Image (cartoon, rainbow, N blue to C red; front, top):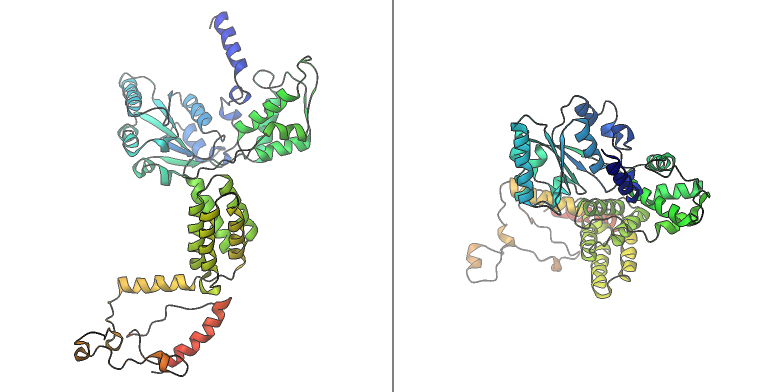
Amino acid sequence: MSLFDASEKAAMDATKPLAARLRPTTLEEFFGQTHFLAQGKLLHKLVSKDRLGSVLFFGPPGTGKTTLARILAHKTKRHFQQLSAIMHGVKDLREVLADARDRVATGGRGTLLFIDEIHRFNKTQQDALLADVEDGNVTLIGATTSNPSFAVNGSLVSRSQVFQFQPLSDVEIKQVIQRALDDPDRGLGMRDIAIDSEALDYLANICDGDARKSLSILETAVIAAADPNDAKAQIQIDLESMRNAVGTRAVQYDPTGSEHYDCASALIKSIRGSDPDAGLYWLARMLEGGEDIRFLCRRLIILASEDIGNADPHALPLTVACSQACEQIGLPECQLTLSQTVTYLACAPKSNAATSAISAARADVREQRVLPVPKHLRESHYKGAAELGHGKGYRSSHKEPDGVAAQDYLGIDRVYYEPVDRGFESELKQRLETIRKKLSAD
């Protein structure tokens, strides 16, 4: 590299954001993901034995998916090629794959093909990768923020190892920040920077385990607090200045991806578990992320029958009313209705007896001999019904003193509905015990 090239590179590096300058270039510099990258873990073993095959990196932004792909290409001495499923199409993909085949045929280095946001490729585009992945012409690393089980073709998933990236811990984020403060070449080590412990804790927490976000906030705070007239003056960063650097926080949430399903699952399970506070948090997370209100209402209506049922018969009409109210008033006011509904459902007694009952009944219909309708229960209000014996012997419950007619309504002895001893269903259980004794005595 000539002196001119070196100075030009230095000038270009100086204009890069702090997060770009500090991008790790070796495994030793890489923070996080020790559950698969630490000594003795699967990915570390594959790399050390030069047995790296095609993999899928799945996890939130800023956890190092792209960076690790570059490091692995260098570590395994493969030619690195990067595509973005948002910016590139089948034509670009076919050209890269053709180049990779030519490189293998001429004895050159293998190709590590990194495809960012691979879930954005459609089925045809993903299928175009299969032959070269299977033949080993390319080592594929696909990165996605969506669960591959939902977003990536099953045929591609089956040919790849899936590694799930986790948000960095607060401790790991602080290590990233400290490296930025200490590094005089790529980081901020040439400046005298003092950060309050409260400001550091706040930054480690507010960045949601995203290393790139933490460095961007740190750089903003340093620029804002620095004295433009004295480059040697100490830069003091306290909690307030760090809050100002964060500004308006955008909550990371994909209303069509895996976070949508994970947060919905957490909401339902929190309500089912009778924890209104957890339910409110997941509701707030989804609202802040722009979740479809109608989806939330549908899920609450289903939950009212599935998990509460007759333990609290008011739950279902409440959720239906919530849905209607949300349609009429919209956001932001309908958050109040949703909050009322979520807290009521969480505190309501729980029963899945009705859910289990219909599941068992349908299983019998599918798997057992189909039962004929008993003749006394069949439709009898048409000409000729009497000659067939339809309706003969039927007893109306309204003519019985207690409103229960002791007769066979099914033809066999089956119990599907078993009320629990919670809420209103405990009353139904006592009443049903009396009814069943009378019915069985027939």
